[in-house]
Image 1 (cartoon, helix red, strand yellow):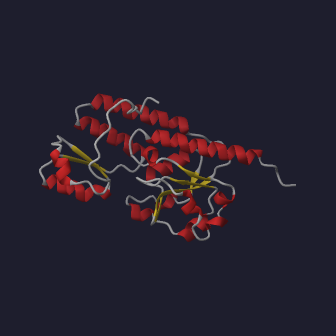
Image 2 (cartoon, helix red, strand yellow):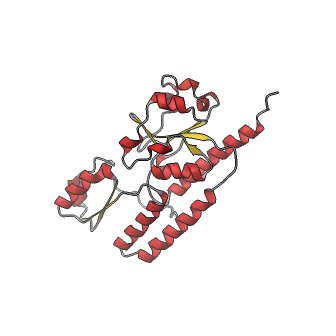
Image 3 (spheres, one colour):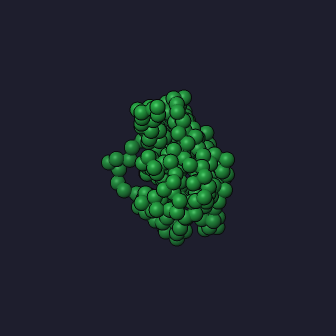
Length: 234
């Protein structure tokens, strides 16, 4: 995969805070030339950093094309425009390898967060579609997480063939999902099609989402194989 550089062999990066809890003082102590933030969730952090006198580049990419655009933007900001353009071009090219028109198309509920339940952000919904699936909450792809909130009753009514969970910043508890009231009636749970995917592969909006897309494609292809192998009713 040409669009993703492995971090193996590099020293571990210091952790100075969570996604929504980064400490301005700790960041300032590192004396950064540039701080890059992402999304409305970090808007207040970005504002505090600016008030503290730091240079901040705030990105808010929500689609696969916007991820490529953010790669180019960041590359230009750090003096690596040509390399960033190559990376973005490779990323978009590699995404095309995920595309399939193979049927049947599984109906998929993707869960980004459990409480409140948050459905797929834009680029994840696009990956679901590239991989031949149907995002059951595609109409909820708003710019903010609150736009993608869903209720238990809505998921039950949608009756997806597959549930994929990738919780931002913490491990998925599949047992807790199974135990939700009424979820036992969902097709995905009846046939064992509930899956966890590492959020580092799907919810960090950079080149690595291609790897998350490959994980989705493997899940969907395995589901199709099961459907085709199932004996037909008389």
